[in-house]
Image 1 (cartoon, one colour):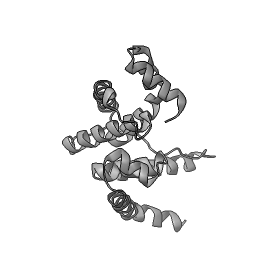
Image 2 (cartoon, one colour):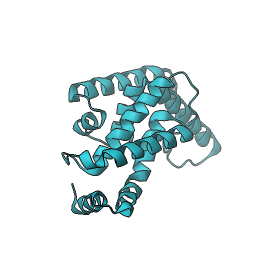
Image 3 (spheres, helix red, strand yellow):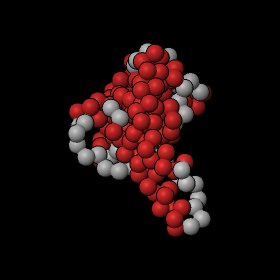
Image 4 (cartoon, one colour):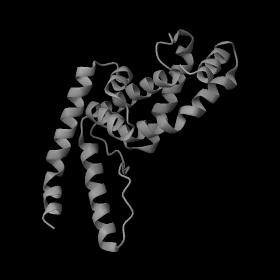
Length: 184
């Protein structure tokens, strides 16, 4: 754990409430991004983060410091988001474009990019929650397999299997569109 984070955690555990707020402030954007990509709904992501922060606040005195506080906090958010996604599996979860398209030069290119982004978004959304979470953390957030295993409370083998299955499903789902693009 880095010294600043450890100092803030110590201050919080000694009664300084603003130290906990600072720990949260430093992590909130990443927590939101991951929750949003797993849940695909702004309100659900905020609910999961709020529930996770309450859990973290209550459990902080028992935090064993085997990882950084931010990793521990992320693990709570990821587990809560996966559980919520499983509960709400068939609910319409909104639309978040996980693709940051390259700048386009013309309207035709912009339209093609928008179509591709929509298809990728739909394909990622169609993944089962655990596979979606692993794919999002690995592909979009750049977490290592070992970090994802720690965050999700599963083995590295399970993470690798979920990632492999998610990539295979995405390839299958997107292959008709990609093949058409190659013929141009």
